Length: 193
Image (cartoon, rainbow, N blue to C red):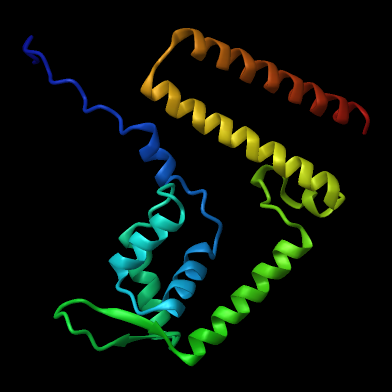
């Protein structure tokens, strides 16, 4: 059946930074808004848009061609952008149409209302609970989440670069203690019903 020859080891996993850059943490509509803003500044090609967004996010997110090019096609099909004549053959650059500028203004108003009304990104696990939390407390929760995610990702990158069994064990201890405390809060809430 099988001989005793050794099989090559599986390829190494991509580095932690790779996963962070490709996680689906981008809010819905963010890409469209960014593309509209960029094309409002100057005509750009799809690859230039990808590079500009990567620069604007300090390298933490680089949209894939599979998300940018279909979006450009949709925007063009719906009259929000148009292709501009190019000096360089083969490079398609796009600019906003008047209809696209109207869409951008609507997007800006929506973003402003969102930021004025709540001033925070809603972590998914709280769902509609955010509508019941007073804004002051919601800001505290948002800040706590921001610190937690930043600490978690920074620790992951540090462990990737310089692995330490002790640091990993300390991290597991903190995570298990935190999970236990959250489970206790949830249990008390269940008993209060």
